[in-house]
Image 1 (cartoon, one colour):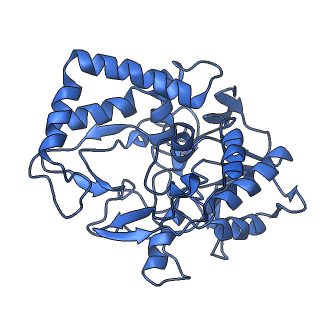
Image 2 (tube, rainbow, N blue to C red; image 1 turned 180 degrees about the vertical axis):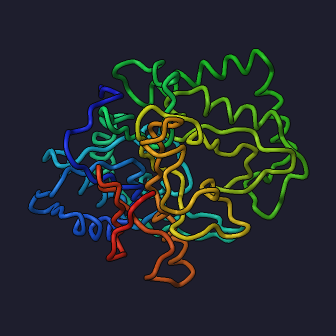
Length: 356
């Protein structure tokens, strides 16, 4: 069983954002970083922030490249929520490729959009599972921490030194479910869901808030360390603030935990950041920061000595852009932060970008 918190290698690093099966973007970015996955050469070690898979055209090829670099000692990766879903055998929108589901699709504003991902064979599924089950949740050293979605020291302290990811997530979930059951929350949530059978239908908006559904969903995120570190904290939305994303109506939203101080610079993925200004009407938890800014203060700030940076620049949206007929000049890109320089390199842009 893997140690859940492991050490980052010393020296300069390249911290790569969520890939989501976009193998061409990965190969282009690695080339810009001076990494040759065929000859197993790298100008500096690569650290992947998780969510290697799902939505894109070839998650299998991405994992083959990452595992090859890892076995050669040239790369490290943390577990993302999309990898945890596979380990828990939790079928989600976008991971049908793993199960051989050629009909897997997203609902974008009510319109079905197929992912068109390469499907895994039985042998490939076994190889994939063997690789991702050994990934740590956190990689860290004195000047840097890498975690997929959220750092919470108190919740991380509840984790054992090593363990099976899926078994741990399930055990914490059982504890939470038992506590919720004592208070009658699951029964009330079931009644609320029964009243709105179209919770997975974009075209039928629930006409009221579902408080028990919200409490149940938030509890499973905030009180389960495995979910918290890989998916982030969630808080109940205000009355009438529910929204449709990931194939269902949601009554909780992501907590902007990065506004609170952290004791060292922390790099995450997960949050679908934009390279341009916010788009009116589009949900964006980074809409109060410039596109290439750190959150929570700089590393030199006394108020927030660490600061948090999200290196996920939404390459995972490319499947949707292709569905609209675009095959280049994508809005989202695959990014790597060169550390300690704090400079971003993109798969599709020549000039590096300095973070602020």
